[in-house]
Structure formats: C-alpha cells, structure tokens
Length: 375
Ligand code: T4K
Image 1 (spheres, protein in one colour):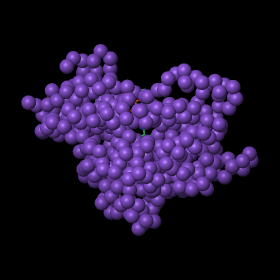
Image 2: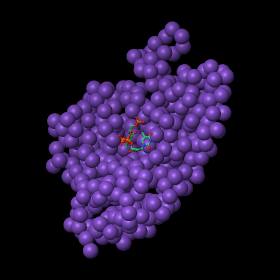
Image 3: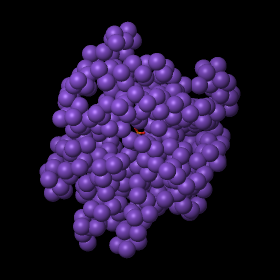
Image 4: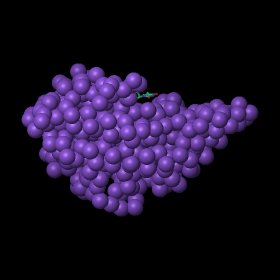
C-alpha cells in the first residue's frame, strides 16, 4: 500500500450536475424571490414530506438553529437528559436556551442513549429527553417513549444522522415530539447548509414557522421573540435537485459499507456496526472501534498511520461533549458517570465514506488497517 496522491477525507459532499443546478438558479433570477418561504421552499417541504414519510416539516438554515428553535417551540426549560456522545451542537442548543444538560451514558452496541440509565437521572427539574440517533442507527424509541410518558417528559430527537431511515417501514422521524435534521455539506443529503424540524401537527408547524421568522405571524403581529433561521431559495433549489439523486447515493453508501465490512471482519480488535433487522439504513458514517490490546495499536496510532497515508478519518465523537470547557463542570459530566461513552470515544475512528469514493480505495483503506494490526 502506498500513500494516496490525493487526500481522502472522511466525507465529500454529493453534488448534482452543475448544469442542472443552473436551471434552478435561472428561475430564481427570473422571479427575484430569494428567501422568505418562496416557491422552492414550499415545494421542498412538500417533497420532503413525501420522500421521508412524515406529515409536517419546517425547513431551516441549518440543523443547529432547528435544534434551538425546537426547544423554544416546546417551551423546554430546567434540565434535559441528553447524551455526551454527539456533535457539540446537540448540547449547545440547550445552552442557548438556558437549559442544563444532564448527561446520561450510552449503550455499548450502537452508542445511543442507554434507556436503562435515564430514569435515575430524572429530577423535578427534568422537562425533556434529547437523544441522538448516532451514526444513523435508531435509538430504542419505544423504551424512551415509555419513560417519557411515565414522567410526563417531552422527547426531541437529534435526527441529524438519520435522513431516510425507517424502522419497520415507518420513518424514524415520526417518533417523539419532534425530530431535527441536518442538511449540512457533510450529511448524506445536503442543501449546502440546511436543516429541518419534523413535528406531529399543523398547529405546531405553524408556531415553528413563526419562530424561525422573528416570531412574525402576518405583517404586524409578533407572537414570540423568534429568530431568523429561514432556509433560502438557493438552498431549497439544491434540496429539490438532491432528491433526484438521493436513492442512488444511499445505495452507493450501502455498497461502500459492505465493502469495508468484507475486509475488516477478519481483523481481531476491530469492531464495526452491523445492520439492524427491520431498519432501512442511510449509512452516513463508517465508525470502527479499536481494542488496543487485541489489535496491537492504539486508536490514535491507527488514526495517525491513516493520516500519514493521506487518509483523513475523524474521531467522531472524541472528545465527549461533557469534556468541553462549557460542560465539564456539570455534575453529570464526570467520566465515572459516563464509562461507556468515554471508552467508545477513545476507541472510535470514522473511515471515509461518500458516494464518489471508489471501491478500490475502500479496499486499500481496509487493507491498510489490516496491515497495521499486530501480527
Ligand atoms: N447534531 C448532530 C448529531 C450533528 O452531527 C450535527 C452536525 C448537528 C447536530 C448540527 O447540524 P448543522 O448545524 O451542522 O446543520 C462536521 C459538520 O460541520 C457538522 O455539520 C456535523 N454535524 C459534524 C459531525 O461534522 P467538522 O468540524 O468535522 O467538519 P469539517 O469542516 O472538518 O468537515 C469534515 C470533512 O468533510 C473535511 O475534512 C472535508 C469534507 N468537507 C467538508 C465540508 C464542509 C468537504 O469535502 N466539503 C465541505 O464543504 O464538523
């Protein structure tokens, strides 16, 4: 194996043919509507509902503003139970709403919030649970719902990784009070930047739509101190065009995932995540977990070895959110409270995966990992 001439990054955005996109731009130039619930925005909300199998969707400029707004729409306050094993935006959305995150450990299998540990973290201040479907694998939605109903809590899913994912034929976005999507460049479906809230009824959607437009309802009424979080027409046009290619892109991701698995399955000390029965996956990441003793090399040494071969994996999610300065002083942030998440974050490397990644490159990356293992 020789080092790649060209760097291979953990991801690369899927982009449709430029000439098809310029057609959409021409229409925007012609009608001069570039934002504020324009025609492409309306059309994309409808088409996404159809594609995803949900009733109500509200588009956003990015996923983080969607998270912040979802919490406002539900008037969440006090403490919210969440996972430290996520991208910082999850907890930041709580911080921006003056809510205290209460970190609960994850389960070792799929890195999602461990339902068995939620109840002991509930206090009189707890108002909601904010789990994340990490790496596109569904949380234990039934158990989380049971706990939420028992303690009268809201459930807001950070669904940034689960575009198109279905559980037993139903969109995973239909669970909980709201689900938040990200359409960032690094996600399986991108609108350059972008995001969305999926909710369960028309009245809630209307409130969310007010909140993302300064709180305006109509020309002269402001119903709440909303923010400007609207998706613009160029983003929405991109979203419409991307829908044409999404199924092909998801299939490419599935094939790449299978190719990695085919080589890595025989390497002691390297664990990867399998498909879950009854789930239609979207394969957003390909994380592997290194058992240093068995593999013979630490996760960081492997990460460095890949890098020196021009293969730029990423350690999502290391450090844990609870280890960042804004959160590490919280009572729930200690590593003794989060042993599973701590271990996973020290073992993980996400390998490159994106539709244009060639299968011979995938095999080379997997074989390089094989070669690094202690003989
Ligand atoms: N919740 C969860 C669970 C999330 O994972 C995220 C986002 C959010 C919420 C928030 O949603 P948004 O507000 O972002 O919509 C990236 C992304 O910036 C972030 O969106 C994502 N999660 C997170 C997991 O990853 P970085 O700092 O690792 O990104 P960056 O810029 O280093 O990109 C990674 C690689 O991708 C680069 O090395 C090269 C490639 N790349 C990246 C961009 C932006 C490209 O080839 N082209 C590009 O335009 O955070």
